[in-house]
Image (cartoon, rainbow, N blue to C red; front, side):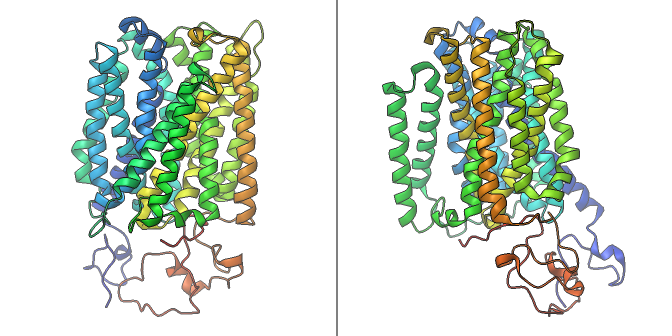
Amino acid sequence: MSAAPAGVDPQLDRRGSARSWPSDRARLRRRAAAVLLVSAQFVVMLDTSIVNVALPSIQRDLALGPGGVAWVVNAYVLAFGGLLLLAGRAADVVGRRRMFVLGAGVFTVGSLVAGTANGEGALVVGRLVQGTGAAALSPAAMSLLLLTFPGASRVRAMSAWGAASTLGGATGVVAGGLLTETHGWSWVFFATMPLTAVAVVIGPLLLDGTDSTGRGRRFDVVGSATISGAVIALSHAALSLPDHGWASPHVVAATGAALILLVVFVRVERIVPDPLVPLVIFRSRVLSAGVVVAVLGGAARASTFVLVALYLQQTMLLAPAAAGLAMLPTSLTGLAVSMLVLPRVLTALGPERSMALGLVILALGHVSLLRTPAEMLYLRDVLPGLLLVATGVALSFTPTTMVIAAAMPTERAGLASGLASSSTQVGASLGLAAFTAVAISASDAAPTEAATLSPAGFSAAFLAAAAVALITALIALTLLVRRSGPVRRVGPPRAGEPFPDQPGGSSAPVPRASRRIAHTDGPPSGMSTRPVTAKPTRRYNATLPSEEVSR
């Protein structure tokens, strides 16, 4: 007799329906773990935007120059984006729960250092520590979520993840304005400390710790150092672009360093026995196209909220708290679309088409924000564009992550999470730098005046962002949707439907008898494992159509 699946009570009668259900305690623990993991992503995304509205107050209180203000934002972005890939792979090797708890602890320390800073140096150090903690926290949380919720339940779990990401980024702008005006800018850093401190305490109690695959494996130190250095150098070049210009020695040198480190990384990964990123995974057209879409989509998405926050304060002359409240509909819309609309769209269209649809709606939102009449009215000229942007972000962010994760083997869930997050973060840095440079150029502002943009500059930036979103949607339609063929359901096939991941989509229909066990982790206890009918050549992924990649 085969062993009972994990979480099933072997003492119940074989005919009893209770035998096939986890215990109440297991279900509650699973739900609590989901809340913890999704809350961690909310905190990470919240901290990418909560500082933006507080920047004028920080600059005034600490007497920061333009360079110091930029580093308050860039320090977090550089550490977060540069270490995501390394942290994702480390989660696979040393354990995802261990990396989650470590990341939450480091993030808490960084928040404390930044909130108590009395000068530029301490504040930048605190932001670097925060970014390092976030880099460890985010991919570990995502990989744990992917492994905890297989099959059809993953759609709901990833929808909640996307809602937390969208809500965190938009809520950061709202909370940043309110906290800065009522309690001072230090509280934009203190606000997240209770959540991360709780994660440190209850993470070991709720999360599964038997997830390490690193026994007998070597960690790719050289590959880790070179790819992290390449991402940091490229992000630094992008973030320096608005202040120094496209052809400045500073930007050229950083870009050159990034390219050299990237070449070294590729050569190292080809010869080491256990590479950080096995280059064979990029033979998957789905994975390669997904990474490209993540970079470009990240550029179009992340820049929007920063530009809108500046637009509300510099063009419409709103106070920080008022600007934050003006962004509140964005948070609510993103949450509603992610939780109520996205699961249905994913089921009906699949992740590839959902992603393309979201990018088109995002482009429409950018176009709506182009209008800068002499008398700006929030309800007429700003709110419709914000609602479209929030909808587009919600419909495109999570499907992009799902496409990349589905193209990777399960044992590399941490690497998949790090690759998806790192691609999006690098794209966000590049997009924000490029669109800010476009806005400065259209505003005819000198480098020392780069912090103030004209309405024409904002219009040019939104137009550029719309163009990038449309190009990204076209790439997704060409390389992913056309490759995936007809619309396929997200979830297990119905009786009589073919397995969608069979080569050419021409496999035999799923028999009713074998369908009951085709998408489970194993047969019920006591049932023979002998297939009732001809067994498909490849196991069906019950969550997403994916392109298998050999390790």
